[in-house]
Length: 129
Image 1 (cartoon, one colour):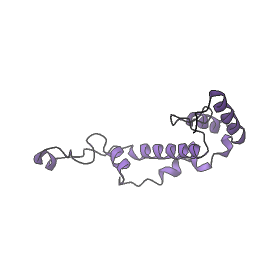
Image 2: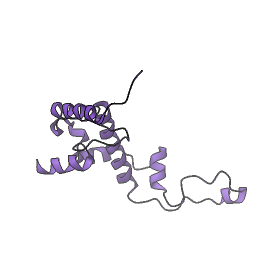
Image 3: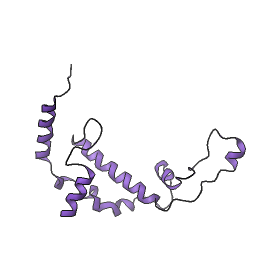
Image 4: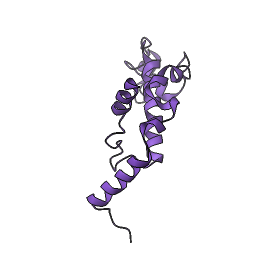
C-alpha cells in the first residue's frame, strides 16, 4: 500500500528536480516573450467555447436554455469584447506551461507550480536575460 511522502522526502525530491532542471530548459515557445506567436494561433472570429466565452462575456454566446420562447428569440449576444483574443491567448499559453511543468513533476498537490517555477518567476528570469 502506498503512503504519503513526508515533508522531508518531498523537499528532497523537489531539490533533486531543481538541480536537474533550470529555467533555461523551458522551451522558447512557452516563455512569456512568445506571447505574439500564441496570438497568431487564435482566429479573428470566436469559434471554440473558450473563445466564445471570452468574446461575449457580458451576455454570453447563447440564450439561457431555461428562458421562455420569447426571451430566447430576442436574445442578443451584445458587443464583441475587444480584448477577447488576448485573454484566450494568455490562458492557453499559461495552460501549456503548466502542462509542461506537470510532465516534469514540478506541480504540487494543489496543482500550483513549485516555488521558483511559477509564471512570475519565469517572467522575471526572462526579463534579466
